[in-house]
Length: 125
Image 1 (cartoon, helix red, strand yellow):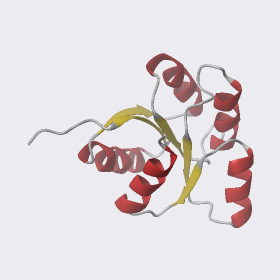
Image 2 (cartoon, helix red, strand yellow; image 1 turned 120 degrees about the vertical axis):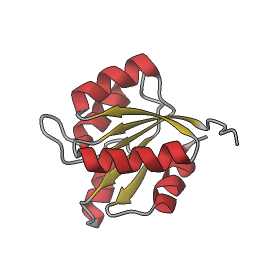
Image 3 (tube, rainbow, N blue to C red; image 1 turned 135 degrees about the vertical axis):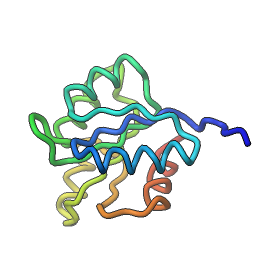
């Protein structure tokens, strides 16, 4: 059985177990995955590896997912890359704030494989 790659996704997650779970779901679903454990690393990888979608956590040391979102949307190289926020913050205000920072979709943890894939597919043009 051959897997057709659907695209490249940059996952930004400081929890290694969460990073591995998300990577597993996406690789199994035919995506190429790039991993970053923090926002600064994600900014470098987003510029150098041109992902099709970025999935990021919100609460991370150093720079939050919201700040990462703003930085990516301000950069001409990465401003058009869709961003999916994947966070345990599940209040409506968190979702609204994420969209104001430039996020294209929002998934709350815990999530199912289907919820994650649906969010990614909803932002890919």
